[in-house]
Length: 220
Ligand SMILES: C[S@@+](CC[C@H](N)C(=O)[O-])C[C@H]1O[C@@H](n2cnc3c(N)ncnc32)[C@H](O)[C@@H]1O
Image: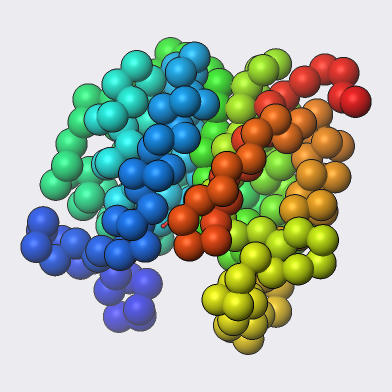
């Protein structure tokens, strides 16, 4: 059995769920921003849900909207296990979504288009080509005024936001030369090509940030 099939076949219970301390630490500060930015949202797509740990914290605290998880298929067993341990009526099982695909997946049981997209800690993992693809897909799919909310570390003015982010970037690039902490200026320029305008920035703990983009017709 190869590694990925052994992960898929593993049955988790609440005691053996893969746990991320980073998620535990950042979930409340992220939620504080989401409660502010998603007041008018009804249906959110999370891209790269990872373990699903974030989703089980956010969904029951954002009861006015549907929270749709997604990730590459290999992560679905873990996400489903987190959902089974912490169910919420507005939390939806992961859709299979690799951003290399041509469209954003939909959940046909929810009769509402997405009006927001959230992603955490994914832009530094994906290649720049896939980051651009994600912004293109989200820009095409969102309605006007729809928001794309991105959490993670970013460089600005050619500088790392901390020594730990410099080391993090180095370790990412050692593992995969296509990965790496992205420059805020590059992200903004690429987002604007997709009619996604940066409307808000939030400084977050551990030298991370939340960037909030909104789809506009007329860009400045
Ligand atoms: C560092 S994890 C972050 C997980 C979670 N969002 C968090 O903050 O803990 C990066 C996530 O991006 C996902 N990912 C990487 N490449 C992807 C791709 N091409 N399409 C969709 N998801 C991808 C991975 O499967 C993984 O869940």
